[in-house]
Amino acid sequence: MCDVLIVEDDFMVARAHERIVAQQPGFTVVGVAATGSDALARMAQFSRETAPHLVLLDMYLPDMTGLDVIRRAREAGHGVDFLVLSAAREADMVTAALQGGIVSYLLKPFKITELQSRLAGYAERRRLLGRSGELSQSDLDQALGSASALSAPEPVSALPKGLSKETAVLATAALAGSEPDLAASECAELLGLSRVVARKYLEFFVETGQATVSLRYGQTGRPQRRYSWVAARAD
Picture (spheres, rainbow, N blue to C red):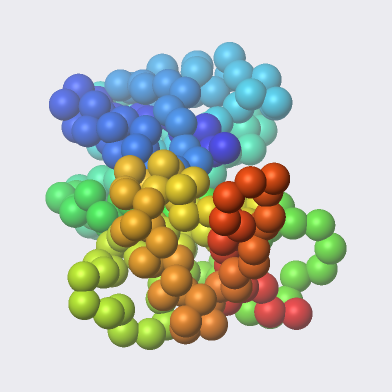
């Protein structure tokens, strides 16, 4: 589970971001701050065990810039990641944010699916870097990627008719983040889809070699099909 702190001074925008995060599989909102000082105070209140993993940060705040929040958070030793959501387009501000170690920078206004894709990509990054053992070059390439265009692994083949790229990205993130596997019914519950639709995406991943399927036998009824993501697990 990924805990998220939202830092946004516009109440309606903050609520919109909160809804998007709450609907994203594996994410939960642990707080909303309208100022930089409030955001820093909230970070200080959390222990190392309960601190948010990700901060959705606006650059234009009433009392300070998002850059100030990043700098002060780093100085205070808060081990959080920052994903900037801002209308700030100044090259020097974007450069400073990148130098501060943000994971992504998304310009306002943006489509809901763009933020969903960034969140899904962040979840995949945490999954890869949280694994035990050594990482392959493909793991590193995917985990680090481009700080300004972090996204989830996407289907490598053209989608068949009736399947959308946006939902495929979310299904990919749900499957890639599952340990060790996922059933169509579980995927459907995570994404708010019907089991039949979720299964179409999962079977597509199997057909294109991005996932494997195995059968789990219960005491009664038909065996359950369990799907595992393999596209990003190169050795």
